[in-house]
Amino acid sequence: MCGIVGYVGDKQASKVIIDGLKRLEYRGYDSAGIAILNGSLNITKGKGKVSNLEKLVGDTEKGTIGIGHTRWATHGEPNDINSHPHTIQSGKLALVHNGIIENYNTLKKKLKEEGYSFYSDTDTEVLAKLIESFLKKDSGSLKKAVQFALHQVHGTYGIAVVHSDFQEQIVVARKGSPLLLGVGDGEMLIASDASAVAAYTDKVVYLDDGELAVITKDNFIVETADNVELTKEIHELALSLEEIEKGGYDHFMLKEIFEQPRALADCLRGRIDKENGTITLGGIEDVMDKLVNAKRLIIAACGTSWHSGLVGEYLFEYLAKVPVEVEYASEFRYKEPLVGPGDVMIVISQSGETADTLAALREAKERGATVIGVVNVVGSTIARETEAGVYIHAGPEIGVASTKAFTGQVTVLIMMAIKLGLAKGTLKNSEAKKLIQELAKVPAKVQEILDDTDEIKNISNLFSYAPNFLYLGRSYSFPVALEGALKLKEISYIHAEGYPAAEMKHGPIALIDEMMPVVVIAATQHTNDKMISNIEEVKARKGRIIAITTPDNDEVVDLAEFKTIVPETMDVLTPLLTVIPLQLLSYYVAVNRGANVDQPRNLAKSVTVE
Image: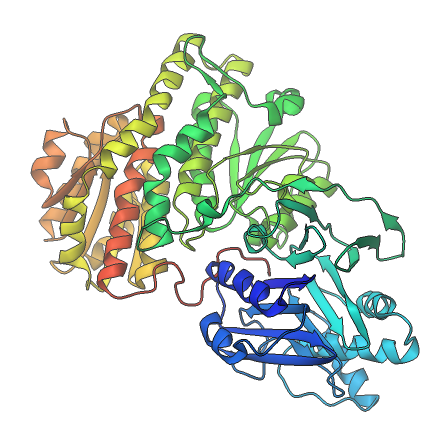
């Protein structure tokens, strides 16, 4: 959620750090700050945007080492005092922190007894002063003071620390919050996200939980919390600056919606064989026996990824005839998780860093289940901690409201379900071949939808100020209804709900009147008659019907007041097409309302705290 950037080298550190913080703005934040070492320690911070911070810093800070931060408030309201970096009474130490220190009240009480005063409402200030208290006991090593302090801490953290008595180094550590090192030529960077370092280096080192590093401009040393030095692999960063720029679009979200034909083609490339009707997913080959023999599959995810998991439930049960449970990762540990050997868990996360999903992953592994990851970000924590997995290859997703990641995740789940169905013998070769051939056509069909957006723009203009929306779908379209409603809520702040269409009669029908737009997703043949009945029920109560349907679905077209046509495809593939108009609807409504599409209020791209 929050962003960390640090630099040590020969360049003006403030310029590098602020550039990095700008590239992390998409993660969501409410304040920003920077600490520069130049003999003494100079801290500039405050509530508001990075652009405000940039003006305050100007060209005055000439130091070549420093740390910066964008904060998303957890403890204490967004204001100048609670923003990071946090410091100590002497002003010699500065610390930035992502995560939550759960026992900060206990530590704070002890530190007050030692004579420390506190000015902010944050847990981070407690950690800064805890490090200082250990530094007083062993003034020869900032690294040791950080290690001793972290042994006292319960919770999650990604931290970076600088001190004016240790001019040439930054000390960093992580537990449960992502952090990486960028390895340059005579310079080193640190960041919570690779996009912050891509302009300066394509070589990165990913820190794992429980690791601490000391970086200077020419070197880095990584150790465990118990002083065991580690040899870390340097990875090549598969990320270009072009991918993280808007490229002429007004918003990252719009760019990413229109990137979906390319993203889906990349996801499929080298994995589907249309001639032979086979699927190759190298990342799960070693666990195929476990998948084939699994008693059940458990899918764990949050938000949009949870919706793709719901689509996955329909896919695996239909194509591979295996029982599937879809869990909110955020709730998984707080019941009695009946998971163990013989179960396979699939965890889904765009960033690969979602804290709740990581916690579910670790719980399942500890209980003996096989865990497979479906992620977008190469080298992410989930990618490293799962036993097997499949990358969606959607490219960087900057917009907070996920679009191309959803369709990429569903595409991967379709391929996994086909592959498992073939391996189990529940899916005939002829059926698989037909499915794969249709799947190969999906990128072009998505492009066909994107080539004509006039109708969805018109609908958006009419309903931009509706107070509520209802989204209805059946079967594969039900998760799409949920996803469409979430998109509208996220970026336009209009209340919206997604429902299985048949459940409308069990309560929500009471809401329907001439002021209620009702979006119906009617593109699956096997549920079409039932959807028509549901549309009739809405129409009888004067609801404003917006249909997402196919060109030959005459009854739906005739009944709907407004309609958007998507190309025909097989029922199991329809979510990849029907979700596109819903993404565009939410985008254009949000723009009409003047909302900040890429940085909606209170939201963060990657939720790295519980």
